[in-house]
Amino acid sequence: MNTSRRDLLRWQFDLTWALFDHHLERLVAEDFLWEPAPLCWTVRPDEDGTWVPDWAETEPEPVPVPTIGWLSWHIGWWWSVAIDHAQCRRPRERTEITWPGDGKAAVAWLRDLREEWLTVLDRLTDADLDAPAPFPWRNDPAHTVAHMVGWVNSELMKNAAEIGQLRLLRAASQE
Image (cartoon, rainbow, N blue to C red; front, top):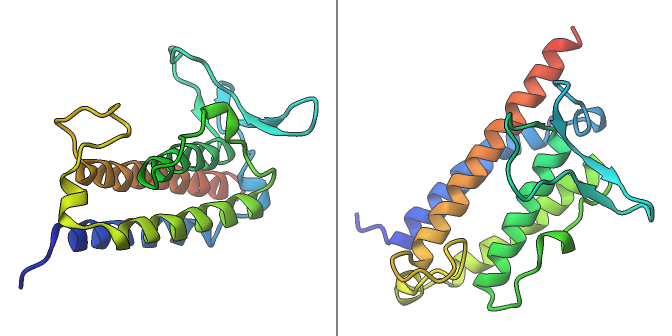
């Protein structure tokens, strides 16, 4: 069997998404802003009601534990910017990407991003995969679009595991 690189990356993405969707389907509203430790990063409404993430330009030590709300914003941020680059659009700044305001809307947002990403993946050719990656390496010629797609898969898997662990911890702490 001769599997193309694109097919392999798509298979890896589909596997990662299936594992993530397992947790998305089981999240309840209270999961999103549950703070598992005293030092947390979360999402909060600002003075005009826009939900914004806690953020520091330099990662603090110790690193705050993120809430599921923060992690869902984080996925939405990096994935939106990756899609912008892949679609040759002006990439949005971090501050332009806000959290939708509740868990149900956040899940819908992530599912919409998945659909956008599938469109990107399905149109990629071998030549596209070999092109320099515009993100997250700032057009470093050593990293290709194939690397970027692999990075999206890896970053999604990491964030999915974090959300899954937080969901399980919250459920276990309620018993």
